[in-house]
Length: 543
Image (cartoon, rainbow, N blue to C red; front, side, top):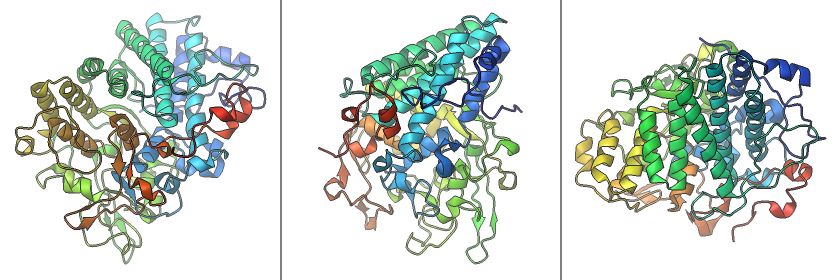
């Protein structure tokens, strides 16, 4: 078990002096140079970067309970979409994401716009120091190469999350303003950069990933912990990016490389079985269930954060907001549920049907507290609530196969696409061949709700089911560009969403480039960066 320093922050930059939010907690230049002087110090610093990816980020003050690294960003992105329902306000966490009430708060330093921007730029600032210091660091050259590769991968990941959060998807928007690019260490006297174009940001991401992959291939060192990027998790990130860029050839190549990992295997049907925790409505007594999605020891995990008890963020955590069986945490008063339409697409023979409740006769209107509500999720439960144990899974091997299936289908290789999809589906549903039938074709025929007519429809549907709660649904909605909705009435059952977003009545079916899906640039960045002016802000009102 690896213990991480909670946060090691390197850049000596103060917001009052530096004209951007590229700032972290200050250290002295001497301390910084000592930390980064050799191979061991570089990895210690990189471990500090990884620690921020699951930690509570207190720079947002009281809102730290919905700002806990990567999983907070992903959960917010899922709740902005169509497949995840938040049934009530509860303590308020993530309610504004679900109700599209974050953009209006861009002038504040405690809400989503500021958190997402500052969080990823903080990572970028730190890895820029690591990359720069690697050129003069002493020690084992392969160790230095391996750590530097991790830094490049982390920078690519951060820019990828930023560009997806603060601008429309790549295809069709290549020349729109993206986010500022920084590739060198910054100081108190550094001037903030202007917004680079979407095309330029993706070019940097691609280049960083190419460098990281090459370095990992050259260093030949097996990673020391699942929290670290390695050749295979970096290749999966490369495949994610290629999907957004519609570069199907690269997506195939990168996904195949990720799949070649010797350290992960697909969850079997048995492994993917979820045992639901219980909740007594009258006494609020509960029991913890079992799930493979709370441990980095699960066979298919390719990248994640192992969280030991004394480094758990307790209430300010993913499982606190997801596991409604525990009566002292946020999910019990604001359960997260699957959309009833998506649930209805899962055959009874599919083991994933057990990841959620079905219609148990208790709608949001009838529910008061706890897990006993229609369509409540059990995929994400504490591993051990009493010790606040629950690991964060950032990447699974199943995603690589789903990317491979989609990219092959886009290229017209239906047979190979079915084979790739089958690797996952044969481990979920023994009757999956009956569902697949004679489907063919690369056309996506619907966004949120519809009838599967093509192989592409089936692949994307299975992606929504398998990766529910893991990759941020709104990002897929944007890249697929088919529009979306939260309202439907299929077979007499109306949507179970608690907010159809009817404050925008003209958009019960939202356009593919709906601006509300894009965060606003934090006002603090505009105030402190002379190269980003008010007119550079994202549009506030849909045209």
